[in-house]
Length: 59
Length: 385
Image 1 (cartoon, each protein chain N blue to C red):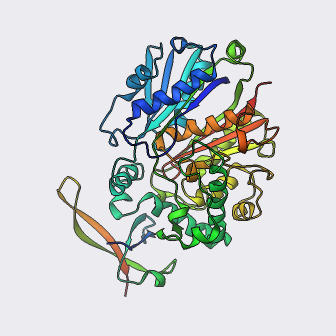
Image 2: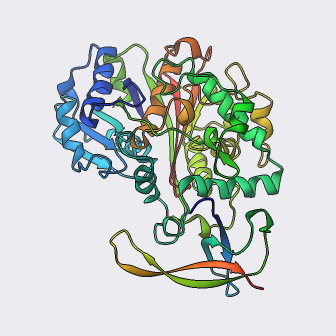
Image 3: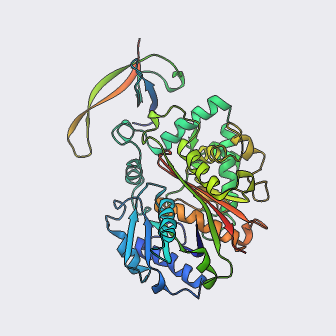
């Protein structure tokens, strides 16, 4: 999976979350760029499915 | 507060075929050899730092190490504060002495890590971050410190060359330490051209996965002379905490926990950063050492990169930092690191540090960080004569 980009993203309500940033080249990521959150299932170490999230450009 | 009368350190490195109990026994043996007036059976309590029982699948290690160190005590406690476990254990030892419940206690730490695969080790260490948010999103410890490095570079103009200068200095110091894991000097070019782990941090910006153990014997200051002519007094001790998750903090260029711990320790010691002659700081990644200079007040915020670049923290510089080689070169057996830092300061303040001795050192400092700065322990020491 590596290399992948991670960052700290502030939601409109003020909450900050860490997460992967996908759908944009790493060198094109800018501090302050607008992102939206997306959801996907992930496999936990216990082999149970749980929800996860990531960020991608708003456009 | 309390006095260190002896200290021991195992070899640091990839100790194949040894288990943590044998490694801790090796550290304890040095402490008792160093202090012939002290009998193992006089030690009344053990405070042991160890981060994870997942490395060896062995829990309940405090009584195990009490047994393997041959101590007489009937009180053994394991302390877990991630990479600040034995820094915290040292503070508990100070409290135990000050409480007068015990006259002589051992504090120390141990970790056996290198027998596991790199991905498993990374996974165990990542439990010390905010697991559901950070570990789950693929943010490892190199990733967390990389976020701090990016913020520091962006705000202050800190450069990758300045980060590399920390690694070069600490490897140079480690080459003078016969117990260090990697005793090999490196160059700025080697650091800059090493493979990227989490940009801007490269392989040589990261500390080592190491096996090792450390210990110190503490007593009340008025009893110290019974055991040694050269005690080292702990004159200030501070601890601080911050959010477990890095993402919950307002400032990524500094560790609030370290600043809180430093303020408490300096106030207790009634001295300031300019009086420190030698320091061991938590260089888990090169950016962490630069932030440590700033958080401890060795320089102003944003000047840490310049401080290392100008050689002010080299051996022979204004304030030598990580004379042992630090986590970077001596190695980072996580649970053992805090007490191992105090071991180095004990050597420096008893004029026993050999080829890396800081001449005339009177006051020393240790700075031990857990996680991405969720825990910090700062202790200040003065030589006893």
